[in-house]
Image 1: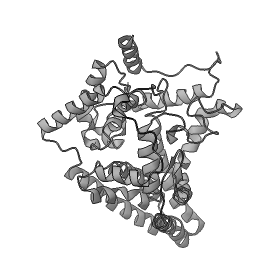
Image 2 (image 1 turned 180 degrees about the vertical axis):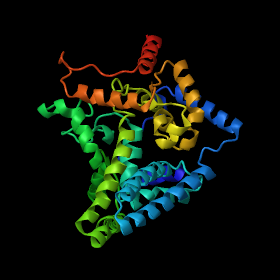
Image 3 (image 1 turned 90 degrees about the horizontal axis):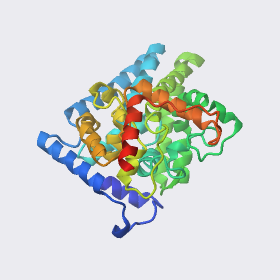
Length: 382
């Protein structure tokens, strides 16, 4: 993790003001929950990083990707290209933890796993600044977190984006555009690496970075566009179209429900960890299956507090984080299941399509367990 931080510091042009120890926000919550998690893992003899199960999952998915790819290339089977899309999304989750240095104690292993992003047609360098710097440092903060400005001004993911007449279809437009997410990565990464700018973050981009980006992009286009078309004519275009559609639907629908929800604005002048709690939601907490299915992202609260901890451990530490939030009077937003989380996101986007003072705007969807946690928090703080 130290090597990742050093790399970010050496490349990033501006991360913000250096705050002195004397005016740091109260860290007691984070110190408490961190110490409890560390003691629990030590008592159980569990490593903070992935184990042989994680290595097996990575190798299995890489092999599955290539087997499915060649099946699709030589048969042009729609089922094969559909499954390539599913495995692409799964490798996206694996890459995510690799680039967070949560896969191994060995930096080269994390870097290798992170290269899955480049293999799939995107760019790991651009992703690091888009996700780890912009999103994880300041989730849901306008002009800081790129994720809540996606599609601005066409989509309205937060109330600070100027509302226009088409935003009354904000929720439907978002659902319609999500399948195009992979194509945005395929092409926009080149501009990002060339300019050294991704959303609200600037970083130092070298000539080598540009050359490597072009290499991976050209190789992806050769594999996913040229070869299928050369073998099967225009029908071969279905290879990249179906794979990208399926991968985007899987990834984007998992990503979007964790932060795009009602009442998730970051409180000012609070410790970093407290702001993570207020701007992040879980769903199906404690479930080992859904933890695997989502690459650990159903435990988004635990991930934001401990991004360098293996996602296999999130169900293990979830009760500890929940209890610490209860003790400190903080919300622990946990949807009962994915369906409730998705509905919460959808209704929130619909609500954002109306002016703040519009009495006719629809009310947000808040499932019972989320309301109870929120009300408990407000009661304790008052």
